[in-house]
Image (cartoon, rainbow, N blue to C red; front, side, top):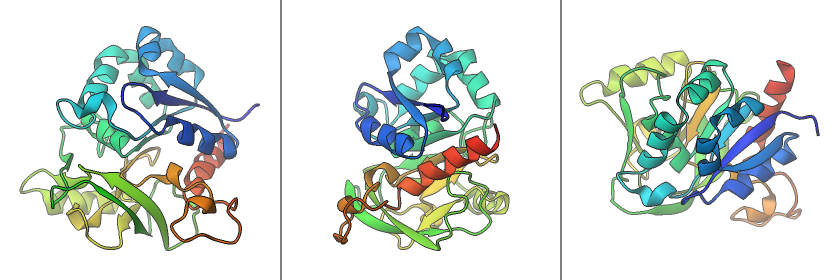
Length: 253
Protein backbone atom coordinates (compact mmCIF):
# COMPACT_ATOMS: atom_id res chain seq x y z
CA UNK A 1 0.00 0.00 0.00
CA UNK A 2 1.27 3.46 -0.91
CA UNK A 3 -1.05 5.75 1.05
CA UNK A 4 0.11 8.19 3.73
CA UNK A 5 1.43 6.38 6.80
CA UNK A 6 -0.18 7.16 10.15
CA UNK A 7 1.08 6.22 13.59
CA UNK A 8 -1.78 5.24 15.91
CA UNK A 9 -0.67 5.47 19.52
CA UNK A 10 -1.70 2.68 21.90
CA UNK A 11 -1.07 1.36 25.39
CA UNK A 12 -1.75 2.05 29.08
CA UNK A 13 -5.44 2.92 28.97
CA UNK A 14 -5.85 4.03 25.35
CA UNK A 15 -8.82 2.01 24.11
CA UNK A 16 -9.87 3.24 20.67
CA UNK A 17 -6.75 2.50 18.63
CA UNK A 18 -8.24 -0.30 16.51
CA UNK A 19 -11.25 1.73 15.37
CA UNK A 20 -8.99 4.70 14.64
CA UNK A 21 -6.60 2.55 12.62
CA UNK A 22 -9.54 1.10 10.67
CA UNK A 23 -10.74 4.60 9.80
CA UNK A 24 -7.37 5.58 8.32
CA UNK A 25 -7.20 2.32 6.38
CA UNK A 26 -10.68 2.86 4.93
CA UNK A 27 -9.59 6.35 3.90
CA UNK A 28 -6.65 4.97 1.93
CA UNK A 29 -3.97 5.50 4.53
CA UNK A 30 -1.53 2.99 5.99
CA UNK A 31 -2.02 2.91 9.77
CA UNK A 32 0.34 1.24 12.22
CA UNK A 33 -0.58 0.80 15.87
CA UNK A 34 2.47 1.59 18.01
CA UNK A 35 2.66 1.14 21.79
CA UNK A 36 3.84 4.24 23.65
CA UNK A 37 6.67 2.22 25.25
CA UNK A 38 7.99 1.17 21.84
CA UNK A 39 7.89 4.77 20.68
CA UNK A 40 9.70 5.99 23.80
CA UNK A 41 12.35 3.34 23.26
CA UNK A 42 12.82 4.40 19.65
CA UNK A 43 11.65 7.99 19.03
CA UNK A 44 13.09 7.91 15.50
CA UNK A 45 10.07 5.77 14.53
CA UNK A 46 8.22 9.05 14.08
CA UNK A 47 10.32 9.75 10.99
CA UNK A 48 8.58 6.86 9.20
CA UNK A 49 5.12 8.46 9.39
CA UNK A 50 3.29 11.33 7.71
CA UNK A 51 0.73 11.74 10.49
CA UNK A 52 -0.23 10.68 14.00
CA UNK A 53 -3.35 9.91 16.01
CA UNK A 54 -3.75 9.92 19.78
CA UNK A 55 -7.01 8.01 20.31
CA UNK A 56 -9.46 8.21 23.15
CA UNK A 57 -9.54 6.24 26.37
CA UNK A 58 -8.19 6.79 29.85
CA UNK A 59 -4.44 6.90 29.38
CA UNK A 60 -2.62 5.91 32.58
CA UNK A 61 -5.95 5.89 34.41
CA UNK A 62 -6.08 9.70 34.20
CA UNK A 63 -3.63 9.85 37.10
CA UNK A 64 -2.52 13.44 37.83
CA UNK A 65 -5.36 14.57 35.54
CA UNK A 66 -6.76 13.47 32.19
CA UNK A 67 -3.97 12.98 29.65
CA UNK A 68 -1.31 14.44 31.95
CA UNK A 69 0.98 11.40 32.27
CA UNK A 70 0.89 10.61 28.56
CA UNK A 71 1.61 14.26 27.72
CA UNK A 72 4.64 14.23 30.03
CA UNK A 73 5.92 10.99 28.51
CA UNK A 74 5.65 12.42 25.00
CA UNK A 75 7.17 15.76 25.96
CA UNK A 76 10.13 14.43 27.92
CA UNK A 77 10.53 11.03 26.27
CA UNK A 78 10.28 11.93 22.59
CA UNK A 79 11.72 15.44 22.88
CA UNK A 80 13.40 16.54 19.64
CA UNK A 81 11.77 13.77 17.56
CA UNK A 82 8.27 14.95 18.44
CA UNK A 83 9.21 18.62 18.09
CA UNK A 84 10.51 17.90 14.58
CA UNK A 85 7.31 15.98 13.76
CA UNK A 86 5.26 19.05 14.66
CA UNK A 87 7.63 21.49 12.98
CA UNK A 88 7.44 19.43 9.78
CA UNK A 89 3.72 20.20 9.76
CA UNK A 90 2.58 16.59 9.88
CA UNK A 91 -1.11 16.25 10.82
CA UNK A 92 -2.04 15.10 14.30
CA UNK A 93 -5.46 14.29 15.69
CA UNK A 94 -6.23 13.91 19.38
CA UNK A 95 -9.63 12.41 20.14
CA UNK A 96 -11.22 12.87 23.59
CA UNK A 97 -8.36 11.85 25.91
CA UNK A 98 -6.05 12.59 22.99
CA UNK A 99 -7.46 16.13 22.86
CA UNK A 100 -6.57 16.51 26.54
CA UNK A 101 -3.04 15.30 25.76
CA UNK A 102 -2.58 17.84 22.95
CA UNK A 103 -3.70 20.68 25.21
CA UNK A 104 -1.35 19.61 28.00
CA UNK A 105 1.48 19.31 25.50
CA UNK A 106 0.91 22.96 24.69
CA UNK A 107 0.07 22.28 21.04
CA UNK A 108 -3.42 23.73 21.32
CA UNK A 109 -4.65 26.30 20.82
CA UNK A 110 -1.35 28.07 20.12
CA UNK A 111 1.74 25.85 19.81
CA UNK A 112 4.73 26.76 21.98
CA UNK A 113 2.81 29.47 23.82
CA UNK A 114 1.63 29.79 27.41
CA UNK A 115 -1.24 27.49 28.30
CA UNK A 116 -4.47 29.44 27.97
CA UNK A 117 -6.89 26.54 27.59
CA UNK A 118 -7.89 23.44 29.51
CA UNK A 119 -10.49 20.68 29.46
CA UNK A 120 -12.25 20.66 32.80
CA UNK A 121 -14.84 18.42 34.43
CA UNK A 122 -18.32 18.57 32.91
CA UNK A 123 -20.55 21.18 34.53
CA UNK A 124 -22.71 18.58 36.29
CA UNK A 125 -19.71 16.53 37.42
CA UNK A 126 -21.01 13.46 35.59
CA UNK A 127 -19.59 11.24 32.87
CA UNK A 128 -21.52 11.91 29.65
CA UNK A 129 -22.19 9.17 27.09
CA UNK A 130 -24.55 10.26 24.30
CA UNK A 131 -24.93 11.29 20.69
CA UNK A 132 -24.70 14.99 19.93
CA UNK A 133 -25.17 17.28 16.96
CA UNK A 134 -22.17 19.35 15.91
CA UNK A 135 -22.53 22.54 13.91
CA UNK A 136 -19.69 23.20 11.49
CA UNK A 137 -18.22 26.69 11.77
CA UNK A 138 -17.77 28.67 8.56
CA UNK A 139 -14.25 29.81 7.76
CA UNK A 140 -12.44 27.10 9.69
CA UNK A 141 -8.86 26.40 8.58
CA UNK A 142 -9.05 22.80 9.84
CA UNK A 143 -7.81 20.35 7.19
CA UNK A 144 -9.65 17.46 8.84
CA UNK A 145 -13.09 19.03 8.34
CA UNK A 146 -12.37 20.84 5.08
CA UNK A 147 -14.86 20.07 2.36
CA UNK A 148 -17.43 18.28 4.49
CA UNK A 149 -20.17 20.21 2.67
CA UNK A 150 -22.50 19.84 5.62
CA UNK A 151 -23.85 22.36 8.09
CA UNK A 152 -23.92 19.79 10.88
CA UNK A 153 -22.95 16.22 11.71
CA UNK A 154 -23.73 13.85 14.56
CA UNK A 155 -21.11 12.01 16.59
CA UNK A 156 -21.05 10.27 19.97
CA UNK A 157 -19.34 11.76 23.01
CA UNK A 158 -18.16 9.93 26.12
CA UNK A 159 -16.18 11.97 28.61
CA UNK A 160 -16.03 13.22 32.16
CA UNK A 161 -13.67 16.12 31.49
CA UNK A 162 -14.65 17.68 28.18
CA UNK A 163 -15.57 21.22 29.15
CA UNK A 164 -13.46 23.72 27.23
CA UNK A 165 -12.33 26.56 29.49
CA UNK A 166 -9.98 29.47 28.85
CA UNK A 167 -7.72 31.55 31.08
CA UNK A 168 -9.82 33.38 33.64
CA UNK A 169 -10.62 36.91 32.62
CA UNK A 170 -9.44 36.32 29.06
CA UNK A 171 -12.21 34.03 27.85
CA UNK A 172 -13.79 36.38 25.34
CA UNK A 173 -10.43 37.60 24.04
CA UNK A 174 -9.17 34.06 23.44
CA UNK A 175 -12.45 32.96 21.88
CA UNK A 176 -12.44 35.93 19.51
CA UNK A 177 -8.85 35.20 18.48
CA UNK A 178 -9.63 31.55 17.78
CA UNK A 179 -12.74 32.51 15.83
CA UNK A 180 -10.84 35.08 13.79
CA UNK A 181 -8.10 32.54 13.03
CA UNK A 182 -10.64 29.88 12.01
CA UNK A 183 -9.44 27.52 14.76
CA UNK A 184 -12.87 26.34 15.90
CA UNK A 185 -14.08 23.72 13.39
CA UNK A 186 -17.34 22.82 15.12
CA UNK A 187 -19.45 23.48 18.20
CA UNK A 188 -22.13 21.52 20.01
CA UNK A 189 -25.67 22.32 18.92
CA UNK A 190 -26.73 22.53 22.58
CA UNK A 191 -24.91 23.05 25.85
CA UNK A 192 -24.66 19.81 27.81
CA UNK A 193 -21.21 19.93 29.44
CA UNK A 194 -20.62 23.65 30.01
CA UNK A 195 -17.99 24.04 27.30
CA UNK A 196 -17.30 27.72 26.56
CA UNK A 197 -19.52 28.84 23.68
CA UNK A 198 -20.32 25.12 23.15
CA UNK A 199 -16.85 24.49 21.66
CA UNK A 200 -16.39 20.82 20.72
CA UNK A 201 -13.05 20.99 18.89
CA UNK A 202 -10.05 23.25 18.38
CA UNK A 203 -7.27 23.16 15.80
CA UNK A 204 -3.92 24.92 15.69
CA UNK A 205 -3.38 27.92 13.35
CA UNK A 206 -2.20 25.63 10.53
CA UNK A 207 -5.36 23.52 10.68
CA UNK A 208 -3.26 20.35 10.81
CA UNK A 209 -3.38 19.62 14.54
CA UNK A 210 -6.94 18.87 15.66
CA UNK A 211 -8.24 18.15 19.12
CA UNK A 212 -11.86 17.09 19.51
CA UNK A 213 -14.00 15.61 22.26
CA UNK A 214 -16.52 13.75 20.02
CA UNK A 215 -15.48 10.35 18.66
CA UNK A 216 -15.42 10.21 14.83
CA UNK A 217 -13.93 6.69 14.93
CA UNK A 218 -17.12 5.49 16.64
CA UNK A 219 -19.26 6.37 13.62
CA UNK A 220 -17.53 4.84 10.61
CA UNK A 221 -20.56 2.83 9.46
CA UNK A 222 -24.29 3.49 9.60
CA UNK A 223 -24.60 0.26 11.62
CA UNK A 224 -23.26 2.13 14.66
CA UNK A 225 -25.66 5.09 14.36
CA UNK A 226 -28.32 5.51 17.04
CA UNK A 227 -31.10 5.10 14.45
CA UNK A 228 -30.50 2.09 12.22
CA UNK A 229 -30.43 2.86 8.52
CA UNK A 230 -31.28 0.58 5.59
CA UNK A 231 -27.64 -0.03 4.67
CA UNK A 232 -25.60 -0.78 7.81
CA UNK A 233 -22.34 -0.70 5.84
CA UNK A 234 -22.86 2.76 4.34
CA UNK A 235 -20.23 5.31 5.34
CA UNK A 236 -20.84 7.03 8.67
CA UNK A 237 -20.24 10.73 9.27
CA UNK A 238 -17.10 10.16 11.30
CA UNK A 239 -15.27 8.51 8.41
CA UNK A 240 -15.27 11.76 6.43
CA UNK A 241 -12.73 13.40 8.74
CA UNK A 242 -10.19 10.65 8.06
CA UNK A 243 -10.97 10.75 4.33
CA UNK A 244 -10.29 14.49 4.31
CA UNK A 245 -6.84 14.35 5.88
CA UNK A 246 -5.71 11.54 3.58
CA UNK A 247 -6.90 13.52 0.55
CA UNK A 248 -5.04 16.56 1.87
CA UNK A 249 -1.79 14.63 2.27
CA UNK A 250 -2.12 13.04 -1.15
CA UNK A 251 -2.61 16.51 -2.60
CA UNK A 252 0.59 17.91 -1.09
CA UNK A 253 2.90 15.06 -2.10
